[in-house]
Length: 257
Image (tube, rainbow, N blue to C red; front, top):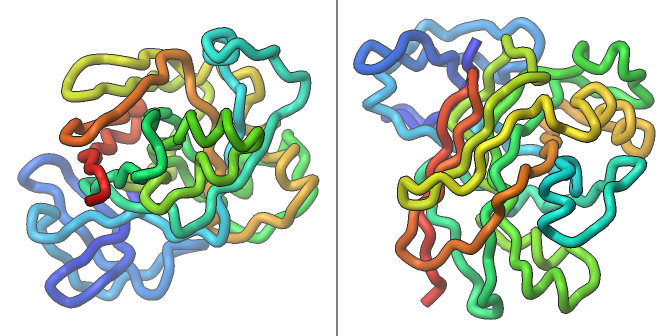
């Protein structure tokens, strides 16, 4: 099932997206998409609604240094355990929403990633049961101000600006996350081209590690890390991240004025 969140002529709603292309429709879900969703009976052509960020998380937990080639390009050492940090939920935006470049930064980078969406409250989840707590997967861009990152010595400001966590276009609930192509393009030029099979810490291992530290709530998002090929984005460009089995997340880039 593809779960989304849309702005329709009747307001904002969670939906199930069925069909493809011109035949795609958004079927309204009553209340929320967790558990066994029920439907209101209303639906719209997907072309007649606007896709929003598919979920508004209470927190976005991110895994750093989770592809060996990315660790190498950044000049670091491969970590034995997952490296985690948090982006504020106010950084979340949906497809098509501009990434706003802060005036205080001259070096903002894209980071295409697979994102996990948690489906139920959980704590201390063993890796063997980790996929049981997953609602599904979506596409993320962990936008990062590299100059802030270097200056601060930690990542909160660099990763936490408003619009620095595009998510979308929807959540795919039936997916094996262990072998998915991931590609990032800037203005159509391929910048990142990898596969989740190269993750240093797998999705189940990530969930086990994070849930040992903090309670995860329905709708919480975990970004699994970015592969090699990160680089700058500037005013006027468009960055698109594609994950196999899910789809493409595209956002224009705009300087604050």
